[in-house]
Length: 272
Image (cartoon, rainbow, N blue to C red; front, side):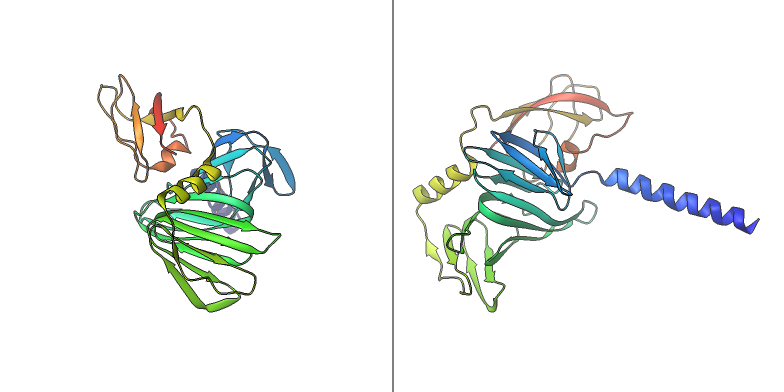
């Protein structure tokens, strides 16, 4: 009898673990893969395609003249410029409490990130010579392995930058400011950049996307007609004729809910 109860308990624990694992879903999803883009996962190199999920530990690599963009479940959006490699080093997000933490590792190249201000973010972007801590912002970051130099630009919001080899010196960037960090060096004093310089850096990371309108399949409760609103951290325009409701969170763009919710097609123009 006791052995039978233990078996039932073990089965229940395993079933609960499987349900939680399925509910968790991927940490993010690729929304753009232009040119030659590869996702490295567990020793395998996978040809990237829009819509594929991203997990902790995955590395997104772009070749020359290639671009990638991925969206995390907390609303963080990251553009990967040509000739770059970005790793999802760690990630956690609790939509119930708003707590979220992540570390994105730029191995080399350039990227641009948009981090929503909502909740309690603890988000870091790392290179071999720098760690940038953000609390909700847009930033551009790059690392050149030939020179060992990192450049961090705070486009919006506040960014704290430190060289992990020199932890006693932190540089705070306000909007429009930039700093560079060399091997074994502390961050340089902030420099104010012009709007033109920032736009050029942003364009280098984002590239040219001739068709920013994206059609996604999402689930919304309700069968009437009306408007919907974008999740926290999104901008753009869209419509869902014949359906109403509210897109609850960025996770809705990543994980599909099971019935009784009805999948509908919504045209969304996500601004880069």
